[in-house]
Length: 145
Image (cartoon, rainbow, N blue to C red; front, side, top):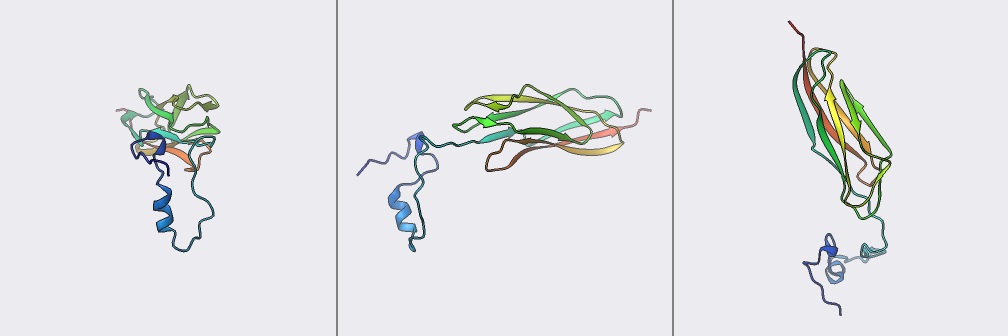
């Protein structure tokens, strides 16, 4: 019987087979999760969850704030699409994919066209199982007096 070292970082998210067997009373499971070797795992992490740009005069543009996309997986993370919604603009140094451990930046600026509290979002489609990564954007447009 193999020795199970629960502190081995390669085992994160996995449990000993014996624990699994004890919980599988009806034996409905068709397969036990295998180790990550040879498997593909794509795991994109976009942060922060929200950016607030404060008050900006209508038709002016704010200083940029950065969102970071990081590949926390152990396979290349594709970047299928990137879009921004609302009175915001973006530039990025992200390419078509990120290697494991790599990150890229998305610079976002607020360019209000209307008065009041305005919201929007940054969407990044990485194709991973979690779906689209998202950052909530918020700012207030103000008339110049």
